[in-house]
Image 1 (cartoon, rainbow, N blue to C red):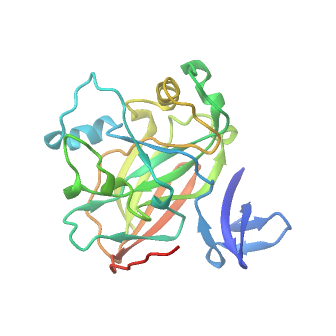
Image 2 (image 1 turned 90 degrees about the horizontal axis):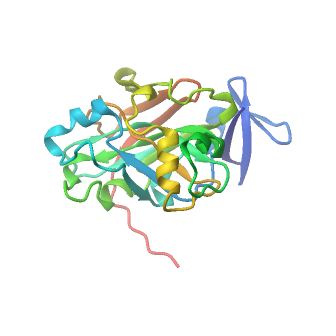
Length: 258
């Protein structure tokens, strides 16, 4: 089943896919463009992986100091970095090269501590799509990815659906595609993950407890290109749907509230 979280009529609702739209718990049916889409899960800890596809590692080889002996390159993201389907992401005015990253996102369904690879997938509640933007000219090789690249407000689109793990029989046989203004720019397949989902769960749970609602963003394949304000970016993953996001110029909005 495909689940969503939306804002509609002044409240947050859980919904499920119903034809081309959504159905609320009370039976109300809504069109996709009638609602505000939220990330499909209330996130706990958000853990993201960098350079987890061999082709993307090769694509960035001139920038990196990585070897085959390196542990997974994992980092944390704050909740304000997330935005839902049909959301907007700001491009900083001084950015020279900002690109999308289409990723399979794993949603943890139960507490996991020191889980072995053979048992790892039993800890997964489901899967969704992430588009984790990066500003390449902000990255620093000795501490990558740095804080302002991967924790910018609204810099990571998530959704539209949480798809039950039972409906994704093999998370390592999913094609990924990214379209910019309708043109295919990126394509890959989760079979090419360097560290697959069980390996990541085994690794992470060896030193930290994973909890229900935690997210693991598994990295992106090659094919990233620069995007600009006004561009519409759509990330697709087989069986998980289409995540739409629009780039806007950073208006320099300031706020300080109690």
